Amino acid sequence: MLRYTLQRLLSLIPTIIGITLVVFLLFRLVADPAEAILGLHGTEAAKEALRRSLGLYDPLYIQYWRFLNSLLHGDLGMSWYLKRPVAELVLGHFPHTIELTFAAMIITAIGGIATGIISAIRHQTWIDYASMMVSLIAVSMPIFWLGLVVIGIFGVQLHWFPLNGRMTPTLLADVHFPTGFYIFYSLFTGKWKILWDLLDHLVLPSVVLASATTALVARITRSTMLDVVRLDYVRTARAKGLAEKTVVFKHALKNAMIPVITVLGLQFGALLGGAVLTESIFSWPGMGSLTLQAIGNNDLPLIQGIVVLSATVFVLVNLAVDMSYGLLDPRIRYS
Image (cartoon, rainbow, N blue to C red):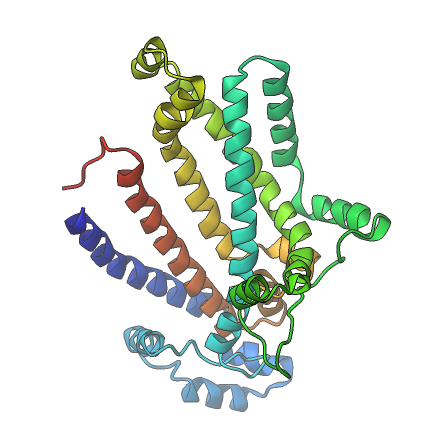
């Protein structure tokens, strides 16, 4: 297992280098930085001078090496529109996306797996049909429509939750801490209002973001559970007189989890890349909102930094999913 882990970690190096190469070439082919920075009002002489100052006339391999060397030093460039370092902007928004994604994935894992198990156990009953119908509707609903509906019902009509935005408490003047700090602080001090204020703003966007993925996980869990419960070892467990709860959770579920974990990992990586529609609807200051802002302003360095970070995170999440297979299924052996 250790050898396989090291091999997979080493394999990430060419993968990430390939990602940076593709991103570099695509953005060099898509637009001229001088045109994007100076726009229609820039003179040809000014554009020519800017191209020379940016080294755009150097060979591509030299430009790519300069770009890769900057990445290795944590320098993603300077935002053309916001005039701030891209690394600072991306790292400032990324924790908010992690917060929203974790909340959505908790809902997805609990709701989707539980629904799938119940549907498989109650196969071809009204519970099975109802849960699969709800899952089909959830998968089919557009995120932007669902977001507007829940805002209208729970925010405007019932006033249960805030309409949009993310609440960040301030314990010290102008100092904001990570969300995890506020959670532990409220738990240890008993100041539950801080915890509630955080969750209050998180409920609607996380539920909307989790809707489609929860339905997908429920359907896959149901399908894999139906396949597993028909296998001989499950029949043997039942023939031994084991309780149905033990048969389902100890024997069947663990072996049915590999496809489910795969889907959860892929969805987690995709959502970390930026839930653009959800973050836009709820004014959530994450990677999705930052991506829309960068695209709207034609801010190529910022878009480039977002793409590199998102792709790298997706690769790392896939690695974690691969490593979890051996823990779930003892039949899997790595050499």
